[in-house]
Image (cartoon, rainbow, N blue to C red):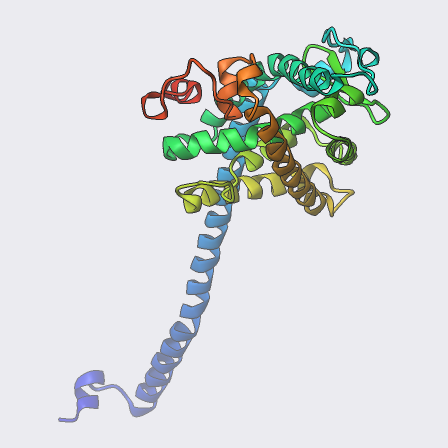
Amino acid sequence: MSRDSVRYGRVPKRTRERMEENRVAAQVENEQSMPEVETKEVAIYDIREMENKELAIYDLTLTISQAHYTTCDYLEARSRNLEKKPAIFNLNLSDFNPNERGNADSMEMHRITTWQYLATYLTPCIQRLVEFAKRIPGFLKLSQDDQLRLIKTGFFEVWVMHVAKFSGPSENFITFFDGSYITRQQIEVMFDYEFVVALFNFITSINSLELNDIEIGLSSAVILLTSQRKEIGDPMAIEYIQDRLVEALKVTISKHHTNDPNCFAILMMKLADLRALGDKHAEHLTWFQTRACKLNVPPLFAEIFDIPLANRLPPQQQTTVVEKQSEQ
């Protein structure tokens, strides 16, 4: 008995042929449909992956936004009705005549005194930046040395990013969170003309982008989590966090600046300019660090800007103010 006889029994030949044709056609159709099913499964997987990525970006943006609103004094709503007034520095440049004998010493003390006044305005901002940093997802998982280094090297840049919001396009002064302002001339006393020009140019250019509070908060986090800082122990871990923050910033910018498709690219270039400004500021700090014996600044300010204080413990016995706050 043939195999076909066993397979089909006593079925007429023409019927058997028709059944065989149907079987082959069904098999071919099934094989052809399998790639389509697999394609649909891949498409569903891709959609889910995209949804998960969008949800992660949304969660990160929400977390950073809440951290910024909670810890930053330089918010848009506060700037609208802010009453501006000169900061009380009790100093007058007209008192210093460059032709007078001993003027160099007088100008040195003038520079030091002005900087000390500035320290009183910046110290609360340092405390708030530490709190902001602790709320950035992944920051507290970094080594404590890297946390401290990021805050030290990033503070001035983040502060400039914040304070720019309170500066008008034609103003020749920088306004602090309470409305007190320091003039361009006073800033030149502490630093130099070229640095001050770069500072005000950045403020003008960053304000032209019309960033909202959320975008400034995300930008601040991107600035803070910069892996190229000196003496960083684990740049890869920092870069991983920053990449996520940059992606969240890009998505947010694209949603809020639909009429300016180049806004994100321009912002990233501005942040590079800010980085250069921060490097110049670090160079100016050397002058103050070498005159630490003449300075009287808050301990936290001294910690951030590496100002050696006479009553500080040796390095191996120190528990820094920033480290204490990070442990809270």
